[in-house]
Amino acid sequence: MFNLRRLRHNLGLKLGALAIALLLWSHVKTDKKYETVVDFPFVVSEASGRFVVANELPEAIAVKVAGVGKDLMFRDHHGRVVLRPRISRREAITVDVNLQNIEGVDPNDGIEPISIETPRSVVLDFDYLDTREVAVVPRVDVQLEPGYTLVGEMSVDPAKVRIGGPRRYVRQVDSVATDSVTLRGVKRGFTRAVPLRPTEGWNLAVTPDEVTVSADVQVLLERRLREVPVIVAHVPRGVTARAVPDIVAVDIVGGEKLVNALGEEDITVTIDYRKRFEIGLDDLPIDVKLPDEIRLLRVSPPTASLLVETGTRR
Image 1 (cartoon, rainbow, N blue to C red):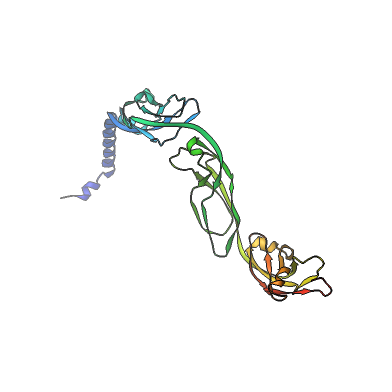
Image 2 (cartoon, rainbow, N blue to C red):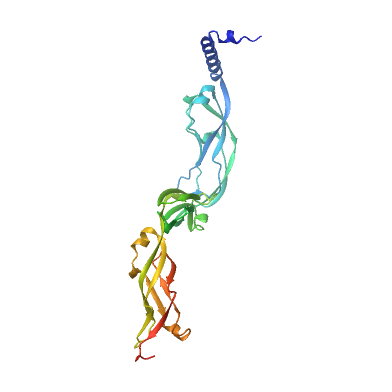
């Protein structure tokens, strides 16, 4: 029968003995020689700098290595597989990968490459290296808190970046998009770094690889300007005309800072003299022009009459 009291007797000593046993077992196991497969980063280096690989390549080459267990487990592996083909024109070639292509493995580390596992050969489709400057398209979805508004367009810095890669692809690219980002519950202006995402599979590099996206967010404010003058537009030469009423109230809405800074002189309210021949002298529609980012709610009254002074040429 299991005796819990006997197990608790000298529990500390028993646990210490177990730990020593595990350490000894681990030392014996990790001191043996093993074989395992390690993924080494794969690099293609074209010496002239005039050409670049246009097709997709594996990120790593699987290599079987041998070594003492503790070396395999606890040492950083800085090896990589490097191909250095000599290219003089646009061409696609098949290159075998062998142990001579492995760099960065020090024999003194106790790790020995044995064989290339996969892939054992790669296709390299070379094209001329080309570069061009393209625009940045921000994919940032700004979801505002109720009662707030985005003032102006989002700005991107830098607005243009340089892409480089195979000529056949570089010439097809007019812009580079950012990562898709969603910002929820926004109620203040923001500046955010966002990575760029060139078209996948085209082996394009982007410099810089991220941009800064900024936006101005303000409290949404309504305001009434009560004495905005009404101008009669397109009055013929020699004719005198005025609007009745000649002053109207304009209700606007927009970002708090913009709305508060607005004066009557910043708003243009007109009626069109030419419409008298279509509508008559009364009830001509009032047209309101506002600064950008300001929205018209209403104008009171919405129409005006046209008063042509006597003694003028009609």
